Length: 511
Image (cartoon, rainbow, N blue to C red; front, side, top):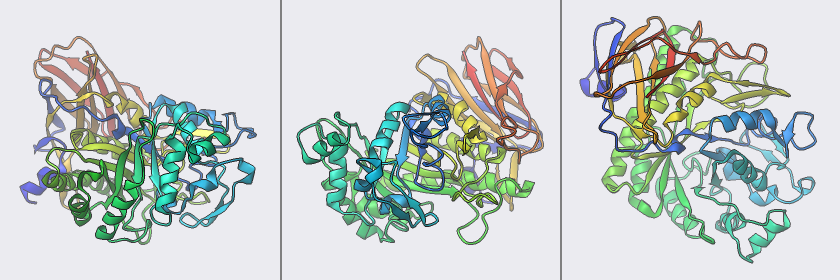
């Protein structure tokens, strides 16, 4: 393998040593300059399977304990994550969604067929008011995905007015008739979704013109400032990004990117829980390829936008496996320790490129793909991915600290990648947080951490691991993969020495 390709695949500046199980991380604690955008830890909720209905929303009359129709257990679990932003209503669903169907008395809202996801009947009982009220309850920014595929300019313009106008405008009056006097704040507006595919099968040139037209009529009302996001590329489609940067430029504040850790789009994607070591290693290599993808899109953006006016928004990412056998809910998949590693490694990459990466949204928040939470009627379970987000949330809004890693290598199909991934940051209180993943499924890692002469007075840690890489939580056994205190840390004048078990993720707080 060429050295240039190898360097792309590894986190930080990585050199490979023999398979000794020893590693060294140098954290440049005196060189931090870029704040890790909290929106990197964003979530995504689509009208798909039981993500909304049964996952978030059960209605006020449900026997499942709820607050104004939102199930309490899920609400409390999401509050714990300090979710910064929530994307809605899709996904592919967004470009067939007509927002006026989802307002007014619920019993009078028209039903529709969800053509993208199983042809099920959508009753529109969860609409604009319900979504924005949820965001207020969670304390997060709403990210609205607008309908460009089958909608009109007028429709999207009026939706923005309905949400944000404080005056005596027609849509503001309609909102008040529906029980909401004060306008909501809307920061993030997506102008279409996957316009190259389910959002209209468009060419990048055609979509560029549509973006310019649609975004023009999305007005800013009464002090509300819109951060407009263009429908960007799917993983390796660099031409799409090139075209948008050339044709749209800084008329957009962000351009999206979608990247799934997936075996392919035809045939079986593989089981979420039944896999061998080779499949596990393939998954680790595949998820780390996102660094190469992000770097290439950033290079295109830098060429057209050296001042970084346009952000890269990876607003769909995560694992995509076969739907769980025997479960009718579309795209419902279990979530194992393997998925937790995908989350940890990917978030470490996003933290590194925070100068350009302004938001990411894992797909999806409840019951769909790489979910934080799974529900079944009144039961709820937290997934290993949830625990990673909870361990990593300390990075939100902190200053990224550059780091170098020297470690062993692993391989998949003769392609090498680092056995250790890491990220470090310093928060407003001066605390340093380090998140590490020992990807090796068999060997523990003794890791020396150099903190650039930072004086260490106290270290606390949390570890996430399990007996096997395919371990997962169930409603009957919810703590098979659960965080625990990590104490195998020794301090020195120059930093730390830790020993991480095989297949383990660790978060450290250094005072």
